[in-house]
Length: 429
Image (cartoon, rainbow, N blue to C red; front, side):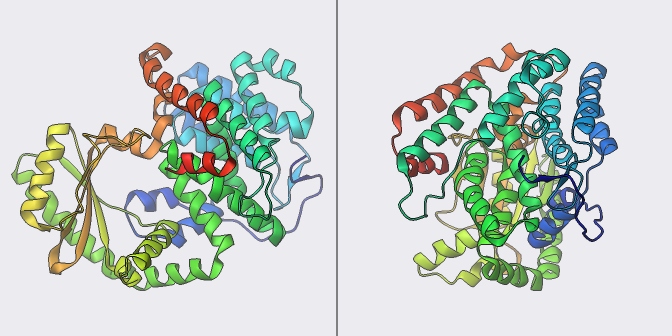
């Protein structure tokens, strides 16, 4: 059993947060977002309401059966946080459902602990829920048995670590949904990490920052990436985390007023040019700010410049509109030389596409602007998971070539890279 006990642990009350709403509004809410995510509770009705938004009745029925079975299996079990054991698969399944993945993946997320914690056999799972669900659960269980070792520890066993990384890549090549469930599993474990001893918090956070967050980044799943990074950084460097959060909080209201002004001006100018667009504030996250501070220090720039750097995102309907919108932005404000990147013409390996530019905005303040289509934004948010999102009437063949390209790349990593550090670096870059 992994952190499951049979007696409840005393703890304080938990309230439901609204973190994702705050993120969509673009409020620069880093630390508040993390605390809201930690406070969020997910109940059975929350999950069912989420899957009913996009799954057909037969898919919802599969999730309902998996939920009923998982609840029965975990009855009487508790996590170290004091929560009933079922809360963990519920949260993992909800995270998977937020990606709008298919019913089999949501069901497998609900059932991902029953083999190890409840001695349910793969044969029974296949009989009850079908071969796909059983295979996904088995894959997640095997991934959970990989013994990771932080690369910065003294004398790590490079061969063992490299082999463990290859096992994960191989699981991805067989069915990427296994790793998507594992990322959702890790995210909720990080959100409840406070219940573990400090040495376990540090070990799991290092593992998260070295393996899982870079993997989420490589797969383009931004929602998992930033949460995993910020949570791990919060435990590994608590003083630096709190310092950055405090500095951001001190200027929050000023930034929000400024971004509201930018949104109004830019939206009006885009409309004048016949471009239908959504202009959003863009949330900054603590670990990404810390990384940028490190780069600024190396470049001899003041890290405090980062706190004055503001960001907006423009979402449009078509690719031509992206370039028209870029012209509008550069017509309004002077672009800063050397800051333009065209990831539409040259997408990142994670399939990310967007135009990036930095301009001297109102009041002579640096303003980062991202411009992309709504379709590109879905890929930017969900990465490769976007190709497993349930779409009524679309079969696997429609997206087969895109999936195949990813699997080929992963298999090449598996064959060619030798050491653990080299493998991790390949994921990060």
